[in-house]
Length: 105
Picture 1 (spheres, helix red, strand yellow):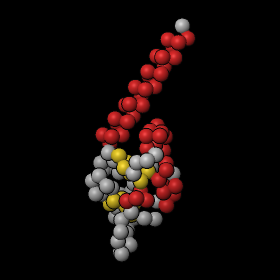
Picture 2 (cartoon, one colour):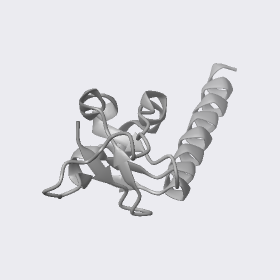
Picture 3 (tube, one colour):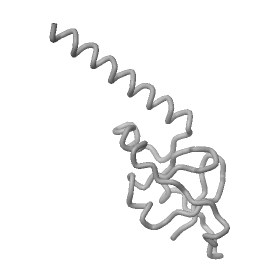
Picture 4 (tube, one colour):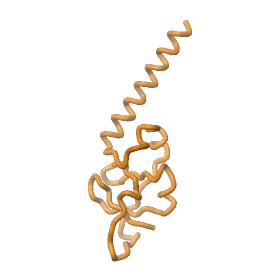
C-alpha cells in the first residue's frame, strides 16, 4: 500500500492497493477535495510510510463516472475544475433534453 502526495495541497495520503485499480486510479484528497491519479503522485521516500499516521485517500467511482470522457487525459483536477466540468455536463444534458423534446412535437 503506497503513500501519495496530493498535487494540489501537498497533503500526504494513504492509498490502498485496490484504489489504484478502481475509478481509473483517481482518488480524492480529503483535505482540499482535489481529484488526482494516485499512481502519478506516489510519495518517493526511502522510509516506509506508516498508514496509521496518514489520512486515507477516498475513491469516488460515481464522480469519475459522471465526468466521463472529460477525465481520460487528465492526471489531476482541482475541486473548482471538477465543479466546472460537472456543471458543463449538466447544462449539455439539459440542452439535449430540450432539443429532444422540441423535435418530438
